[in-house]
Length: 291
Image (cartoon, rainbow, N blue to C red; front, side):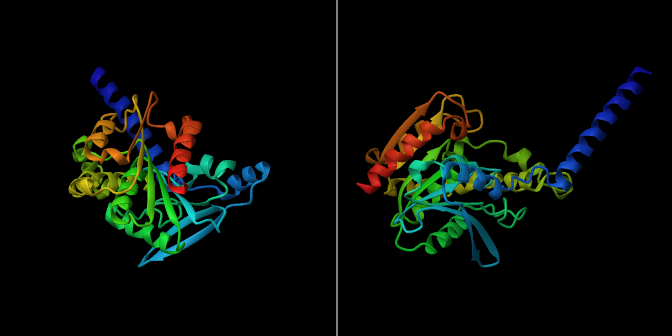
């Protein structure tokens, strides 16, 4: 009798969890889409001009981008969010008064937010080409690329591919070392089509791009000796999602003259929990590229 009761209880919890997953997936509760009206209300209270939007078409894909700051500035801050996420990850920086004299761009990366939501592009090279198309739309600018988590991997791709326009990179919790990428087997298991029915689209896109991240980073390995872009790296000692050993990897791989290391006692979410610290690093990078 006891085992039957346990089976009934287990079955109940399984159905409850399945129902919750279906609810989240089908209703879009966790779609990570940004609320532009809300952020603009916050900007209005701060006395800042409203953010606007721009859509860049690249083949059959589209890139939805938030535009702010001084659109006449020749220095652009390009914010790249992690996985999953959206442009709102960078709202504290888009709304910072000290950055309003620069052009500010914050795209939804492919597959997230309003950039073909749910249609993944699991390729740093492919996503890099889309970001370069965005950069093409703002000619004559020098770009400071600021990334969090997966956005750092993409920022590193841009630093290698387009050093003529990328003047500096700021990494916050960057996955850069392919040997530190784990969990690919279970990610592939959860990428079976059956699981797509119960997985929220943003998490499916996240899973699919993380499956290919290690191989993408392996392709970049021979290019580290060619790095020509000053790089500012923030890494938390208590980060449980990106290994603190990334700091050691970067210090070994990047030319010493281009290294700017910022160890931090925090975790993976420094980008939000210690905005003043990240802003200080951004200003350090701006000082170097505008001097």
